[in-house]
Length: 619
Image 1: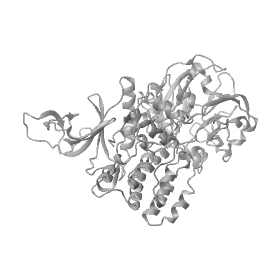
Image 2: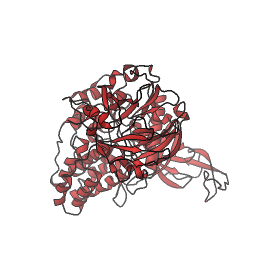
Image 3: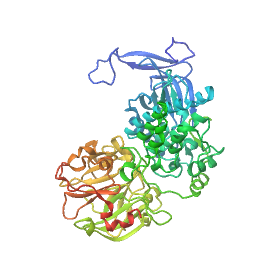
């Protein structure tokens, strides 16, 4: 422990101003009695005139963890010095991601989630101050003591699962669940830690330089394929972790990075854990995120093992196939309904790991971080799921829209009802918009939402993942194309980018009737009211974030819609009516400027009501 010591010439020192006992220097109205305090470190550094670094507890590609002394609160803490990759804009973007996601984690109060005390920028780097857990990690426990028995493995699984559920509810993902990132308290309980990689990784498996971020043998296949990630991705990593605890081996380790990554993406597990626990692990390791057990099903299955009632495990897991559409969307933040283009077959790993500019290195801290279905055409020429991702009005043509689904779009003219809508053109690849989205894989793989620029019928902000574009479009898809290169959502600092969950993506936009430039913006299970301006920085948040479930007359009792809205299509000739899409269903709603109006005018209807969108349906 690096506690303050009496002054000696060999020790470095720093000056700090602190308040009197009981006061807080940042609390309004507090009484400050300033005094000069000497903070000393035993040959180490002092961070932010407060944290005295002592022993280095560990180091990896994403950062270094130190034991430190918090001089202000007189306690021992752990301080993680994060190594943001790159420089300039890339480093700034990394820092924004870290702060956004770490703030979400810091709001989580949970027995099995590490407590985050402070976030700060110092000496050009980001630092996370957190609870110091004196026990070792699960990986150290297995190496020193041996394998965990099935009941103990299931108990640890329940604890880590409960931590992940709290993190997912906060709109974040972990993305690096593994034994080295689960610490053990003195009472033997588990603590999930090391969230820095989630933000630094840019929400994918690769860094900007092409290096693989995380531990490939614990990664979900969708990460290595650069497909959408969600809570199910963390559950896959939990499955690999349970396999290691019970067998001492991971099911996809092959000795080198390329072979391991290929095995994760395409090969069956090479390790089989016997008994009911093995059945649970096998379900978690399914390559298809939609076929993995939900958190609730997994909790039931693990609890049955702990309770000694394994006969219920198979019955629980047989129900594990999830519904399509909105219920497989990312959590209210998280992150996770971002559409990415899948690279089929063995080409995926070849491109990601052996292609030009890709570094075959692993970035992590281990010395030994409901995903939606992909919309778009498969190799067989059929569509994987029925849904609409985004809608953009065609300038100058009343009732005509570009409708986006996965990596494709079509032109649709709406009528008084879905049956009278007609397809004017498409489906065609978004990549055909060469002046607008050409060379931008993220946008040609999927558009999430479109927000009109006030005062200009030809300009739109287009959102995909945690980025956006400003585009200029004419009635035939031409115009000036993109007006800028992709920018991070954090540019919307006074509106969308200022709320937890929203910096990770926008799902849908609905204009507020009768109020020019005001919109409801949806992300996950929440919405906010935004007034746009000439640029993102001048947009302002008028209300929210609030749960979609508050729209009781409109979406009340409809879990699919309160879990997330995919797209909104205006009804021609009526500024108060909209068709709202979620998964393979839609609603007709009547909305006033304050979210009231008549609410929903019908109960949810199937996507098949829209013959014009037939080619976006499952065959």
